[in-house]
Every structure is written in structure tokens, then in C-alpha cells.
Amino acid sequence: MKKLCDVAAFIEAATGVALMIDPSLVTGLLLGESVSGVGIALGRVAGFALLALGLACRPGPDVVADDSRALRALFIYNLLATAYLAYLGIGGRSVGILLWPAVALHAVLTFLLARAWIAGVRVKLVKQ
Image (cartoon, rainbow, N blue to C red; front, side, top):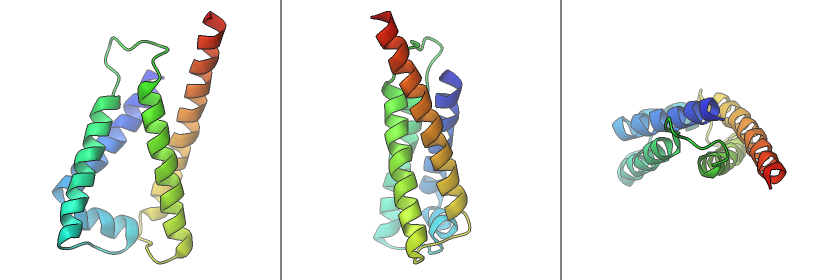
């Protein structure tokens, strides 16, 4: 669980930093269109949120095995990101070179996080 959370948290934090530095580049690569004006400001705010999510969900060395808050947060984020990015791609209006790889990455992380979360719930139930 710790390694999975580390990887997912790192990816979200790195994406957040990229959005903070150059929102237009990130949106261009993901959605095929760059942003300007207020879109840049909103992209940076989204970058702040992703960086915060990544930092908050990165387990420390003292992580408790059955603590699933980080798993839940990363799972919900990746599930929603997968669904929305796929929706954009299927609509065909906002497709950049990295859109489908991003959908695939988020889908894999969603699956792995769900599996780890379910395993943690099972362990918790057995302990009770």
C-alpha cells in the first residue's frame, strides 16, 4: 500500500507542479488546446490542489497499515479524472497527444488503489 500511495502521490504532485509552472503547456498536451487569461489562473489553482493532494497523500515512514484516508482520496481523484478525461476524449473536442495515456494511467491507478483499499477493508474486518 505504501509504495502504491507513494507512486500515485508523486504523479499528482508532479502534475501539480507542471500546472503551476505552465498551465498552457499541460492543457495543450492533455486536451489539445492551450489556455489563456483566467484559464491560466484556474490551471495554476488546480496545480496547487494537485500538489497539496500529492503531498497530503504521501505516506510517511510511520504510516499505519490500515489507514486508508490517503487511499480513498487518491482513489476518488483518479476515478473522477479517468471518467472525465475519457468523456472529453470520446467527445473528440479536447484531445491532446497525452490525453489517452493520461486516461490509461489514471485507470490503472484507480484499479490498483481500489484493490488496495478493498484488501485493507478485508484486513480490518478480519481484525474485528
